[in-house]
Amino acid sequence: FCVYTNILTPFLDKIKDELLYLPVLLAFETGLRQSEITGLKWSDINIEKGLLSVKRNYSYDDSKKSLTDKKTKTKNSVRTIVLFDNTIEQLKKQKQKQRLDKLLLGELYADTDYVCTSSTGNPINPHYISKRFAQAIKKYNYKRIRFHDLRHSHATLLLKDNIHPKIVSERLGHSSISITLDTYTHVSTDIERNALLSVNKKISEYVQRKESF
Image (cartoon, rainbow, N blue to C red; front, side, top):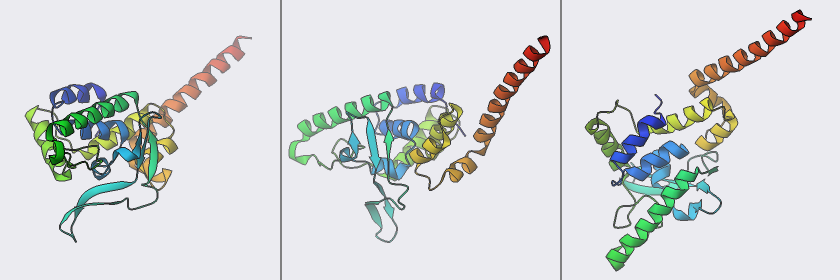
């Protein structure tokens, strides 16, 4: 399922004052996994160059029965992606908000370096994001989707915009381009069909010109 910008934008407007806002925006505009978003730190981001490095995830560890910050599972998951201008602007706003929260709370503020935090500076619980996202989707009468569908939407829209599958694969942290192509077969087929239509049109135009001589 693909969430388009004309659908997501009004949804973001409705949740702009919630903790959910930034995780939703990041999922849609970067394609990061939920645990990668909650594990994101400011030290992973170069605002000036517009780059974001994925190095860890923050998720529930069944063996420890607690939320744990740990490195990504595979070397392919460790990656650096280019950010959209809007993503950069929203990150700047989040940084400023954290500065204000810190001024208000003083020593009570947890200076954790995490990007997605509560007003106390603590990282957002991934389970909260999933639960609150589902609640917001229902509250505002949107078609039922999962938070993970935002990542799929990011990939789908890039592929539909003719971004090379290798670039999309690298942004998603897939181990190979074949995984990306297999996962988004429906998009790949559409791209192939459009490409063939374009070539077919050029061939037809060439044949018509040749026959006119």
